[in-house]
Picture 1 (tube, one colour):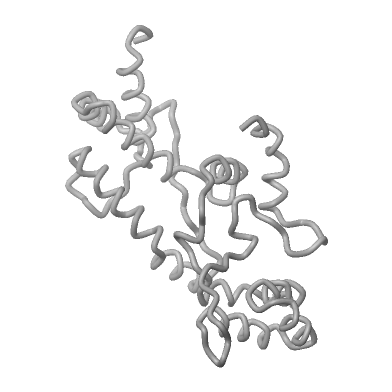
Picture 2: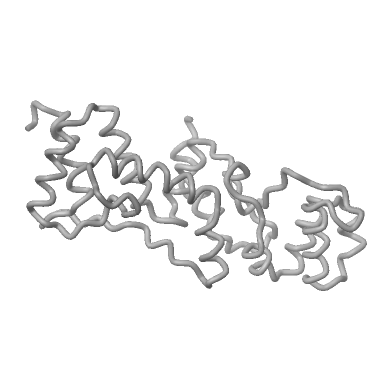
Amino acid sequence: MLDHPAVALRLVVAHAITGSGLWQVRREPQRAANETVTASLAGCKAEAAFGKKRREVLALLGSPDEDGVVAGGNGDAFAIAGVFARLLALCDDDVMRVLTLVMAETSAAGSTVIEALGNHLNVDMGTWWQPDDAFFDLLRDKEIANSMLAEVGGKLVADGNVAEKVKTQKKIIRDFLAGENGRLRVETWLPRWMKFPAESYTSRGGFRTADQWAQVQPLFARE
C-alpha cells in the first residue's frame, strides 16, 4: 500500500466514513442552545447548500438514502469494504469531493480549527448568514447592543439611545436592517462576532472565539 497513495487515500476516506476497530470518527452533532437557534440553523441558506452537496456525495457513494448522512458509521467490516470498493471506482476528483464532505460533517463547530480554517479561506459569513430572531433573542448586553447600534445607525443615533433598554436598542437595529420606521436600510451589516477574524465588542475579555484565533494566529502569519 505504501507504493499506492491513491489507494491509501480511498482507504482513509472509507475509514472516516464507516469507522473501524481502530478508527472512531464522529459527526458534528450541531446541538443548539434552544429551539429558536435549532430552527434558525435548520432553515439557513448554508444548511440548504450543504444538504445539496451531501446528496451529491451520497449519489457518488451509491447510497439509497438521499436524505441520509455520510460519516458516522458503526465500524462494520463489510461496510468499510463496500465503501472502499465504491471509492476505488471513482476518479480522484470525486474522491476528493467525498473527502471534503466528510471533513465538513466531522469538523467541530466553535473549535479553534474552525477559526483557523475560516481565516485561511477568507470566508465571508455575510454571504451565508444574516441577523435573525435567534440572534436578537441571544443579544442581551446593553453595552454590546449600543455598539451594534453605532455600526448600523451611526454614533449620533447610538449616543442618543445609550440609556435605553436593550429591547429598545435592538428594535432600532432591526429597523435599520429592514429599512422601517423612517430608518435608512443597512443591507450589508455583519456583527463582529460573525466575521473572520472574529472580534469582541468590549474590552472585558472572555470572548472565546476571538481568544481561540489569537492563540493560533501566529502559526498562520506567513500566509
